[in-house]
Length: 434
Ligand code: NSS
Image 1 (cartoon, rainbow, N blue to C red):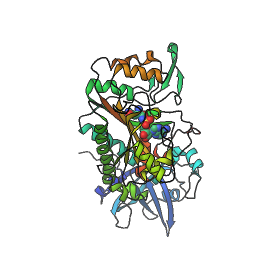
Image 2: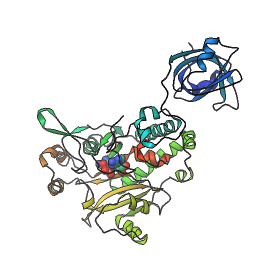
Image 3: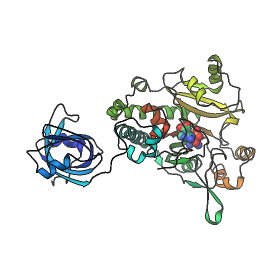
Image 4: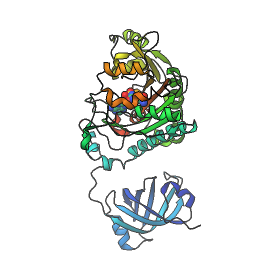
């Protein structure tokens, strides 16, 4: 087998006693008694590279003494095992090539304000805390799709440019679309997911979704990623069964596979360990009772805000479903309850520890006349939903689905104060750069 041209730091322990090439960036540097210690990172980890005046030529030794943080470099050296070193190994440098000597790096160990860091998000992503969050994010997505794939779901992605709204017309981003008028950036893949579910039974889509939310909160992005399963012949209870198994699997996978990252983030693991089925299920009416008892009464018919969600979820030690919402606080497609049409078969999942709603979903209307009626009631143009109505014409069946917001889930699992750190490049009402 030909040896790899260079070795990644997280695999260095396999190369103890050998001379390898590393390619990365300078993280920090210090010198003491004729030796330079460079902490080098390559995206997989950090390793200490030791440069001894006696073992390299004078020019290399001198260069290493002046290297700014984040300079890109290729170094060759011998891997030694060292119990005190972070990854259990150290590298004794024999040769050093500097690809680019970096300008003075703007992100220093001193405290920076969050706006400064957000303006430098393209560089901030190189820091250990951001690494940990991005690795948890990737694991959340991997675990989520793996869970559904293993259950026989088919991934069928939905378009992003669409002619119609899904979740209300007030948060649509518009764009001119050739001779066809206005296109909207999708708020949710759900409607197309329903078509896919009628084609394949159990499907999910995953992609970016957009909401021109005027909200400036810790939980709102204007662009966020949503994973949406949709299942034919599934009712409200079936959806909650599916979602609780799904969320538990994601949390347990992150605990298993991202232990180091959660430790770096100083996340309290005890509440996450308890995230296992069954999740408590309460009705909207019961949630109102909880609010009343907590001294935060709310009139029937209104949707919860972040504060109400925090009060409700604080009564439970794991995520809680709130179901049977008033029809007026939900979208046009929600199936009404047969015995009480003022409420719909919708359920949201509220995360514990004040993280609020991470999942929204429910059972969809499958009756053609009722759906036509609802479109009219919500003032939506029937013509653009022709294809969606067709699904109620050709083999309509009860069906349900949900959408999980990836960033809110990551913020919860990582214990972040704000959703903006849960996505590589956040889009907020007041931020489009970088
Ligand atoms: O509006 S949702 O509650 N539901 C839907 O979009 C359904 N059409 C999904 C479906 O049934 N297929 O949004 C779902 C989730 C919600 O629980 C949040 O976790 C997330 O999407 N979400 C957001 N995350 C970040 N920022 C914003 N603005 C946001 N809006 C929703």
